[in-house]
Amino acid sequence: MSTDSTDVNKWIRFAQMDFDSAVTLSEKFRPPLETACYLCQQTAEKILKAYIIAKTNALAEKTHNLKTLLKVCVPYCAEFDNFRTICDKLTPYITVTRYPSIIEPTEYDMKRAIKDANEILEFTKSKLKDMGYE
Image (cartoon, rainbow, N blue to C red):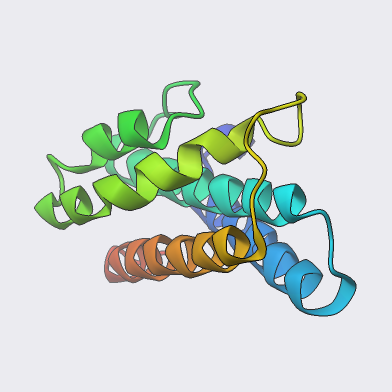
């Protein structure tokens, strides 16, 4: 039996919840743009960690840097390398809701973050589904 920190399906569910929250906020409530962008970064981080846990049966390195997580995924599936640019764009959003920042996302940035997060989420979920996860 796996522990909470290594339960792949929980990581997938949390990634999906973050993504759904970003989309809902962006469409209905006009949130601070930083909040939606932050949730997109969290979506990518959690789904990559789900994949790493599925492959290694261990909790991923404690990092918010998406490129660092991506480097762990690539040896298992070279297609992850296609997401380097997306990871470069999403990683800085981890700090925009935590600290005053020079990053001030625009509405375009928010929409792009949602598109990018969805791309990495759906790709990774399909790989996880092939491995028998939800």
